[in-house]
Length: 589
Image 1 (spheres, rainbow, N blue to C red):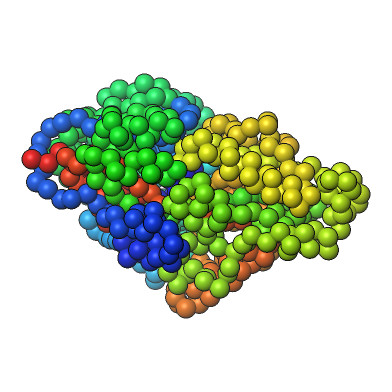
Image 2 (image 1 turned 120 degrees about the vertical axis):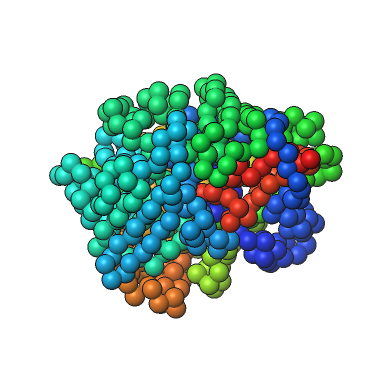
């Protein structure tokens, strides 16, 4: 699922897992069998210098244009920044950090330190070396409340001094040491303890980006997000630099002559917004060199000429969330209501009333599939195959509501206290589904009506993406449940999504049991793999039972790539922060 929200490092699955998911989920479906046969990378050929490529960014809304990973939360912004944005670390195909990237990472469990060393010659697109201060400054942007970054999570409190800095009690982050000075290339993170996932990208404890301090230092944190340095003329140390931005519509990229891996091959990359509804026509007419296939349009494009299809199953899922609390900005934590309107029986019944499998088969031509838990199967033994999820069962849904006292009074059920019950559902537009998202949403509302729940769409229609996340993030009044999606970190820890101290826990649920399980899965004991697996299984069972968040489905990600291109790959080791490493892409000779 290439969703419109992101968190941490964006992961993709290996070819072996792709085939496994395809076979396991789609024995009777030709489309998913076809998708599973596609390679993870375009054919490798001899590259030539030069040429311009156009990349389609499918969205039904203008992009927000926040060109800074510490502040951006939109998947679209992250996509469009990918020609310039590069992570500090490269990984292997299992997301384990190696020494091949712009920086190296060394963990010392005895000293409880994580040492980041930036390689000499890794330069911003203005020619300045990336420094230790640039590494440290990224943490400041995330932790300083004036920036209003959505990235801060209590996970960062493992670094000494982060909590004090975040709360405004300290002017600097005491636990980040720069032994060779701010202009050196070494940053040492002094931690209260090291965590089991720190060897992997996307672990949520170690930030994997740097921010150009020399370029941004004179911009007050309050003005950073709206500044020209972020919105109009951003600096990156990746293969390309920004040439031109047409606000909300397109970005042109040209080579960064200081790029540390060597001059990239292409003369220009143009990212351009295109409506999901016209994606299939764009592929057939070869208007773009790279276009994400809208799965509902697969039959229209599968025989297109001049393209190679490259596919994967991303580490992601769509979910239904229930609002049960609010974010307390002063305390930097989620606070749950004592008696939330969306009770456990309501949440469970809503889950059992959803005919997700039937929807996926009908509307996505078999290229989406239901997921039973909040841990995707790609995470191997962390995935609990014994959790069956909320499969369609109207009888069970009705029984749960009857038992809990939600009696029918005419067409609709009322609350146990006899008062009327109206459930307000915030549903968002979806680039991967295009115009069929409306039909899918109406289908689920009809399903809930069948069990006597008076569910109404907020605003009477789908909500545009930017407005949707503004409402969800800021706990707008009048929202009882919402559908959204995550593109996940490649390290399975759930703290950055569902803990008491993360803004990304959009349902705002907080329980002692959830806190305990999240702590245990990232504890010192969890360096023992068997113990950690056990805690992941307990957490999945707990989340299934409580149903604060109901996992829905995931989808094949299929890209149509100009068959004259080489170097395009979805393999984790050949990507960067889950995005295409555009420095490898070129026209073939």
